[in-house]
Every structure is written in structure tokens, then in C-alpha cells.
Length: 614
Image (cartoon, rainbow, N blue to C red):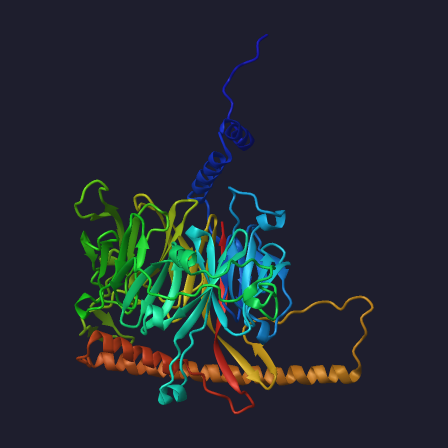
């Protein structure tokens, strides 16, 4: 008897086996996996929920599935459902604190000298001029480099395309007494340049005003060029390759002796790294343009975006060809938005040569159309756009007060980013899923949602509501990494400092059981603990009373505002002056009254991160 040959359904294991057998390489398998993950995330049956929450008094950063707290000293992995602690470094003194950090992901197309070099590592710059190379997974110190005993290095930066990193010193400015005496410093700053894979010194450049000009204000390294900005609102580009090839006096190697140090080893304490690049004459300028304080952006196909420094061009963005500086057709972009914050324009991070221009009520994705073999000007065309529905976000012209009186709005003009209107706040691109994540406040106080759009056509795929509030008074960041949404917000919390003790309100204190063999507390210790708890409870009650008094004062002010609105008091003010007055009133309300106790300081800001997964 023959077996029946009915068609059976494939389960998940069969699909994975078939996919791995048919795939030509690992890249094809990864793309197929991400396609499946995108389909799962966009299903209506999948919901996002808050899975983790943590606060910090210092800046919170996230990169490559890892989150850094307490100034890069605590590292958490968020690759699993519940984030867990990867490592916790020993707390550092003020003289040895971390100033800046960069995460180095080693390339996959080459093999480095040691297996440890092949793994991701964290480069940190300390306040006393050391660079530490730490393991990104364990925090173990792999290498240390001493920069200089003379110059104060403070900032780390990437030149990603060249696999180069640089370290900048603080600017050497004249003091008030030196300015009165007519004393000037020709050296503005120093720039130390390293190759990243492997970590090796290229050279240290002195940024001298005699070479670059007396009005030089800042320097960055990007895409193989040295970009120099000036106080007269102009930017010049110089070839970094030309500088190192022509003006390097000695090729340095970390850990090797150098004649510039009298035979001492490079990068070791207390000698550091000598200045081996001395520019002795004027440099050829590759490109120069005048721009406003926002600077310029350069992207492929080779165009640049800038705002001319003239007043008539305020609020506009000009897209020009880098070859001849000609303005592209339709290259002047102006959203004509009336808002407290300016619209932003950037080259699309998906490397398609497109441009994202977003404001409070519109997001435009533009593409540059040009022909290499044709001398005609390039053209800017709209690929797709996402807009806010004006009918939904428009405020009613007639309102009814709590007393039942009808009040008509005298001011018909309304800001585009008014908190009571639906407004675009943030745009984030997820490169592996090819999705645009847009944060939208929906007009209700403190309510926001994340809308996911297709990066190719702007189609709305799904909407995710955020449970936590979104207060525009403080800074927010949204990170979207595959199936995880991270919301970093700056909250208004109160920290009471009295003498040497510090405690933060609103956070539960840690509790735990006494271990075996632990000594019992004496009567005096119990009495001291009880008195401390009583004192702390009294202090908290005083603060709660002050908070209630503040809320009462705020309610009275709101009542006064409502009464003024009932009387239809129309103030003929410009809309920007009105917004400035409202901000001043909010700042006055934010001042917490000091108690009549020994409270010495009140601090309101702290960082807060919310992790959400499906």
C-alpha cells in the first residue's frame, strides 16, 4: 500500500534549513533573516511593551546593542529581552575621568595581528591625556597611550571613510589680562591623528594662525580632508593626505624610540607623542564657501548643503554641486515653517544619495538627479513626502471655559510646533530593516507615538504608542535598533544636597537580606539608624509640602491666565516675542523654593532611559 503524498505545511525549522541550504553566502542569509524580522515586527498582532528602565545623572549613550551609563563606566547589553550588566569599571577620580569615547567595530575584510584586536573595543580619552583601549565586552584594558604633558586633549572624532580617528585639544585662547596687554597666541589647537585598525599614530598637527589665518575658529577631519571654519562665517577644505606627505618630519611608531623625544619611546609617560607635522608655508585650498553658523554638509553624489550668511537667506538651505559650486535646479529649499525650532536637512544615512528635509509638519525625501557626462546643472526632485493632517492638528477657534463662558481666539496665527498640535519631533533611520521611525506628538499633553514608514516610498507601516510622557522642555533621543526602541529623556527630578550626603527623590532605596554570619547591630547603631530614618522622613515631608505649595501657585497662575482669556485681552505682540515670554514664565515656575532647613542646593535634571521590545 503506497503512502499518501499530501502536501504538508513547513514549520519554522524547515524554513530555516531550506534557507541556509539555498543561500549562496552569509550575506544572503542575513538579508533573508532581516526580511523575516521586518515582517514579524510589522504584524498587527505584535505589540511593544516596556521591558526595562534605568536612570543616570550623567549622559546616556547607546551603540551597537550596548548602553553606557555613569560616563562610560557601566555597560549594559540590550541584545536579550532583559538587559544585563556586561561590566562595571572602578570609579575614577576627577583627574582621571573619561572625557570622551569612541566604539571601534573592527573590519571583517582583513585579519589583524591578534584575535583581541579583531574584537570590538572602546577607545576612551581621560582628563589627564591618556587614551585607553578597552574590550567592548569585558571592559578589560588592552592598551594605553599617553598623549602629551603640555597640551590638554579633550575631544575624540571619527573619519569613518578613511578608518582614521583624531583627538583635539582645547582652544588656546588669550586671557583678559593678555588681551589688555596685546599678547596673542599663534597656536589655536593641536590635532593628533591615528589609524584605527590597528591603532597607530600618524602624526600631531599644530593649527597655527600664521598658516591658516588669524580668524580660524575650529578644525575637524572628515572624508580625507581637513575642514577649517572661520569666525567670518566661511569654511575651507585642505587635503590631509597632502599635509602628512609633505610636512611630516619623522614617522612615529607607538612604543618605539624617536629622535624628537631624545630617544624616548613614543606614547609612554611622561613624554607622550611629539609634534611631527610642521606646516611651514601656505596650503592649497581645495574648496571654500561662505555659510552661516550651521556650517556645511558634503555628501554623494558630490554636492554640499549650506545656508549663505546673508540675512535674506535665513531659513533656507542651498544644495550646490561640489564640482563647480553651481546651485542645483530647485536647490533652494525652504519649508516656511513658523516654529520655535528650525527645520533640519541632512544627507540620507542609507547612502542612496538622497536628502531628508524635515520640519514640524512635513518630511521630504529628496533625490539628486545629475548626469556625469552632461554639463547641465543637477536637479533636486522630491522622492516622497510625509505630512501632518492640518484638519486634525488645527486648534478650535472658539473654546468654552470652566465657568461656561464662550471665548473666541483673538490670535489666529499658530506655531507649527505648538504642543497642542500634532507635530513631527524626531526622525530615526533603521538601516537593517530599511525603516524610518518618526516621533509624533499628537496634541495631547505629554503624549507621543512612533510611526514606522517604508524608507523607499514613505508608506505608513504601523504606529506604536509611547507610554511615557514626552515633555518638550527637556532633551529627548529615540534609538530604533531592529526590534528594540530606546527612549532617552532628560527628566525633571529633585536632588537634595545637604553637607556631604545626597539623595534622589522618587527612587526606591535598595533593600536586601542580611547574609549568614553577618554581625547584628548594637543598640546604639539601631538607635542611630532609627534617628536617621526619622530625620529623612521629616525632610521628605517638608519637600512634599513645598511641592504642594508650588502646585497651588501654578493653579493660581493658570486661573489668572484663564481670566485674562475670558476678558479677551489681546496683546499685539509678535509671535516670537510671545513665545519668549511664555518660556520665561515656565522658567520662573520651574524654580523650586528652598526650605528653611540646611538644604544647600536643588538640582532638577537627570537622564532616564526606557527600553521597549515586542
